[in-house]
Image 1 (cartoon, one colour):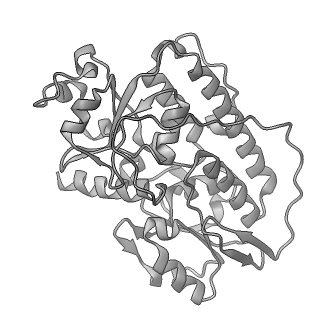
Image 2: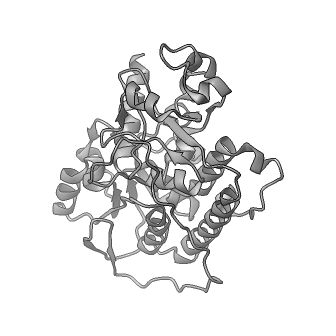
Length: 339
């Protein structure tokens, strides 16, 4: 139980990092339907000349004097992006990652030293690694003080803190520029953007738009993402009416019963929660999702991580919410996003 609570705290910190500061309503009102436009034909992007100045997600202009060779990644999504664009061999320190039973993702990152956890950052370890670039979640990931101190020590720090799906894809382009791999990062971003648009079009063809509750954890309250978040946008793209939590990712049982979910997705399914256990919970047996048996375990890491697998996460959502659409086969391209 203690391990599961630690995991919940870790996930909530990571989820909150992508939540706007405005407090969303915990009502079942759906978010406005988002749109991910397909890209035009990609054009070759020349490698940037260093020094280069990057404006990060907090609006700070950060100058990187030379192509970074030693990078510290303080968000799991950043670690995935760096490996996906070909800079994985430059990552010398990383944040703890809940994926793969805390071994992290991708598997190639397993042995990279951990310099930060959800409970804090080891600044001394980071400085000892002599990085020439640190990528942080910034204030949204409670890393603001660390960013200030690292910058004071003369280390370039970029904040990657997407609050929208488009921002998550833009972060791939931003990091590509920061490390001198613009062609690879633009190719990946273009592929993801096109794939997300195709998935949105696929989901738009569903016969209904069900009310969906996404369960993160229920061991100390009922936790679910807010509607006004990057994850709420993912549910809108999947053509679902999300039943969202408040700014603290919580919703009461009374609110959940009143919203009456038609589909329950178990983000905590990988941690032992089963549809059978949900159906036996006191007070849950009147929900439409329970009565219809529409309780589906999903891969929480893939769905909630704003990195190179974001299209894979949207596809998983659509398959769980609208399984009939996926039975006919998905008209999706293969490429970096599928790896």
